[in-house]
Image: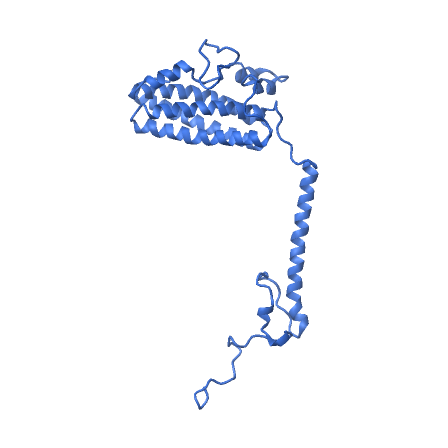
Length: 285
């Protein structure tokens, strides 16, 4: 402060007005001439004119060049591994396509049965479980239909259901092929009607028949709960069997991961349904 009350022109080294103007045109502060996105860990510019001013931007350009070179190398490596036509997709006869098609139909009926029982009982435990089945299996079904579309294959097929399991295990030891694929055919092993939603075609393992679905629609209260839990238990058992085969035989990571999750989730729900049936004095059937 001067004697006449005005602020003095001198500023200390720690004053904000004391910006370094060395080597800058027009005397602008050095900080304002540098890009805002420079890394914080670059070395400080050496004192003494324009040499110090140019060193930090040049290092930034070098860093960008390094990133671009790494990205180009990664792109070339990907091209070399996948070929010029991009990653391969599952073929029409693959386990991936067969699993996605069959499990989408399987899931559709599970969702249908869950909607039916939701309206046939007031029991909150059963309704909550039915909602979980609807939410989980509808979402999984949407994923599988999306993959089929992205692979350029149709959702429907004239191929008999579950044939992908037999093809995938043919030529091997044969022991597990019958376990997974021997339960289906043009007629159900127990003589039951074809399931609803199958277009009158072959019965896939675990799927309820049209007559059983009609019985569920007509039941009420605990009768509907027990019938639903029994039908869904059989549905889940077959679903686990299919998912184990899908996890083992699929060529895509998407199907293998989804199938593994189905095995774990549905096995847990089978145990839950057994407890719910026991609470109602009923066996699994």
